[in-house]
Length: 238
Image (cartoon, rainbow, N blue to C red; front, side, top):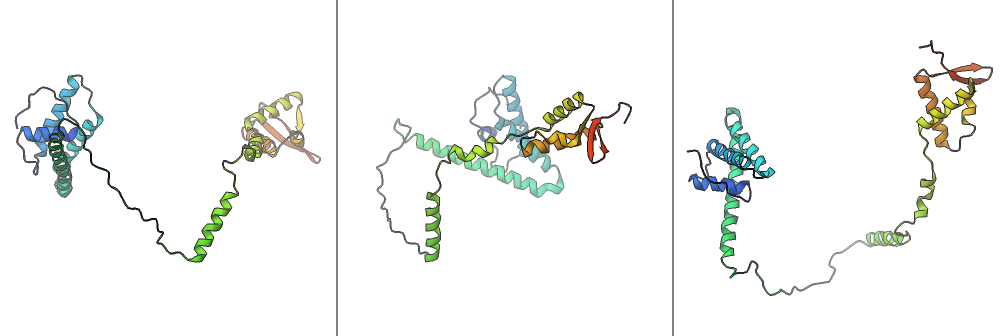
């Protein structure tokens, strides 16, 4: 198969290009010489790039597909897979070729128009419901429909007010709070950190902040009498 030399044409897609190569070199579409076809196809795509033409991704995808089929064909253990891949590609090419032939025939029958028309067909409609249902099943769905009517759609914004109103407190903000408290006093009673908490979220965030600071060896907890006190760790401590 001699190296092709032709001007760069525009093809509708990779299958269109493959058909062109098969027709140009009079290849048998039912027994494609995949090794030669790969070289010709890739050579054409390369010429498209050299001519600064935009190469659609589908052309690159087909090139990869052809190279894969060629690679599998070189491996004896994958002969069956290779034949299956070639058979699949051949089927697509034959189907695409037949569609092109039919499209050309139809284009010659349009008498200058690009569309066909026909008189509308009147379809008879039988509105009789012919399915049979158990009475209990009908009652079940009836009650389901009645229940849905009680739900106001769309759901009013007031329904989300309790969710939106809840303030989410971050652990970082409570770490800052603890630092400020310790800067004012050398020691802070553990229970005092929760006295002014306005929500469960704030209390949980405060507790997690204390755990984070202890883990980072920034603060320590000492017990005196019945109370626990939090203070900064000594710089010498590790």
